[in-house]
Length: 263
Image (cartoon, rainbow, N blue to C red; front, side):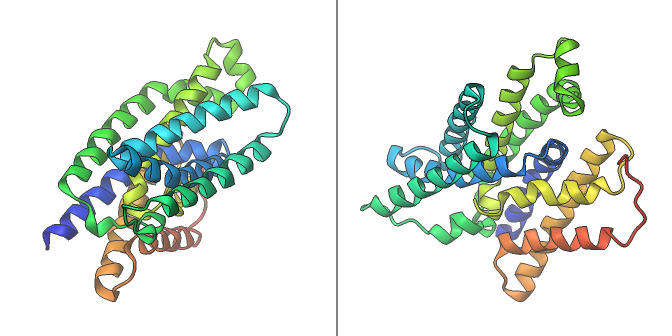
C-alpha cells in the first residue's frame, strides 16, 4: 500500500477513535447544532492561522475554544435562546472566515480541501497532531465520563450530587473544539459533525450501556474511514465525503437488524 494511503488510514482511524465516544455525548445531549457552529468557525481559524503563521489545527482549536467560551457567557445572559445564539455565531464566523480568506493577498487557499477535507495529503506532522491530540482528548473525556453522564441524565440532579456543571460543560465544549480541529483534515469543516453524529447514531441501536455505545461508535467510525478511503481509491471519489457516505451506509445497514439499545 502506498505511503500516502497508510498515512490517510492512520489519520482517519485516529480521528474516528476520538470522534466516536465524543459523538455519543453529542447525540445524547442533542448538541449537533453546536458541533455545526464550531465546524463553521473552523474556517475562520484556518484564515487566522495563515495570518499568524501558526499550525492550522492549533488555530482552529483556539478559535473553537474562544467560541465555546463566548457561547457560555452569552447563554448566562438568558436574553436569547441557545439555538438563536448558535445560529448567530455559526453564520457570523463562517462569513468572517470566508471574508478573511478572500482578503489574504499573499496566500493561495484551497477552500475545497478545507471545506470537504484532504485526508490523502495527511503528513507525518499531521499524524502527530491527530494521535497526540486525540490521546489527550480521550484521557480528558475518560476523566469527565461520569460527570458528563450525570449531566446528560439530569443537570439539576447532577448539581445536587455535587457535579460542577458549568465547568464540566465548558470542558466538554473545549473537547469538541479540539476534536473538530483534529478532524478538519479528514472530512473538512462542513462534514466534521457527520463524523461525530453518524457513528454514534449507528452504535446506539446495538448498545446496552453507554460504554459499549462509545466503543461501537469508534468501531463504526474506523469502518467508515476504511470503506470511504477504499471507495475513494478505487472510484476516484473525494475522500472526505466518501468517508461520510460510508458512515451513512453503515447506519442504513444497521437499521435492518433488531434494535437492542438502552432506549
